[in-house]
Length: 479
Image 1 (cartoon, helix red, strand yellow):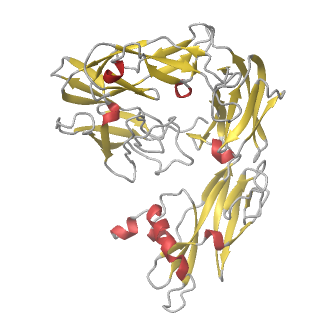
Image 2 (cartoon, rainbow, N blue to C red; image 1 turned 60 degrees about the vertical axis):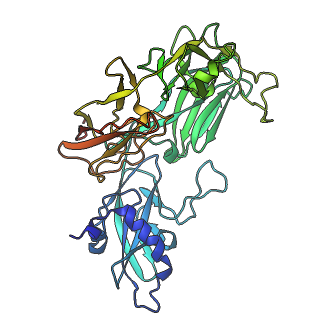
Image 3 (tube, rainbow, N blue to C red; image 1 turned 90 degrees about the horizontal axis):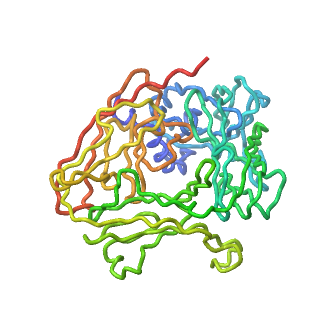
């Protein structure tokens, strides 16, 4: 098999966009000779499988919409194009799955329709979906299965006044935990409705609640309209108690910060008798300027503090929670100002020369489609001090068909083993829908290379650190 024939679906999509204008073949004899249907997220599709008509069937899950792609293979050079939006789609059994021709309304979204080739599962079972384009036709088997362990998070939260809390829906699909929030196209409402206490809304298909006044509990109902399933949780709104806004150092930092590096502070609301609320991204941070030279030693951007110049300790505090309730561009109206100030924490910027760094876990392992956070620890001045420097390392990984590596920004943490592979991304740790990469049947060692970014210490040249991480097959779902 040639290298061209091994290339995956992502390359096919790119070629298809260039070939759509030639679909009639007029003038050069290059006409469509065959069609093939595949899941739009099936990364196992290749040129060979399309030409041979050996694309596998599709699995769809109740409560979740998904998309098909119709590929056309041309006669002259076996090039491939996408014809999804030009086809007429039919389902042999709409009681199992419906398929849209742009004529099925999205529930709860006025004036919105599913695009052509969208699968809307109705009930468990198996049926045939067919696509017709010009004088060609092709079909695929669609199996509709039930997701398991559908959960909404967080559960029974307590929210501080003027804070916003997003909710996400997760489920196991074929044993793989995934974030299905956007794919369910949920609706959200409180029972009873009391907009003076809290508002429930959607933003990009993600449910979120804005807490406005002390009260509760209210019941938040998130409905998955495709399968008429309702997930419920209680929401309480509380005031931040005295001393309840708590600012913390990032894990691994003890107050000293090497010049040119940064630390991600964390802010929590401690209500005193239950789970804390993370308000890190909803707080503002400021260096104490009563020490007039403090801002020459450290700076604050959002919750990230950077050491600028070695010197004496400077302090940072957080405030929460201001909100522009009437969207007039300021926080001057009643109830909009910050209601609490945190404890101040000290940060001492120190000089140091990076002499080595290490990656953890080293030669570790993790189950495919689950998450493993990688951290990098820097050693300065030959061991005089150590400090996390994860944000200052770039990554690469072997076998891009199984794993991808993405370098995060210097203001984001790194997470790994998402989307079925070694994916070094900031995120919640739940893979996308559906995960990329075929399921492993045996352990697969991956070589991970971490390279020091010149943004930390431009004059320091250290060799990359190479480690092995082994992906293990997903455990079989419990019967």
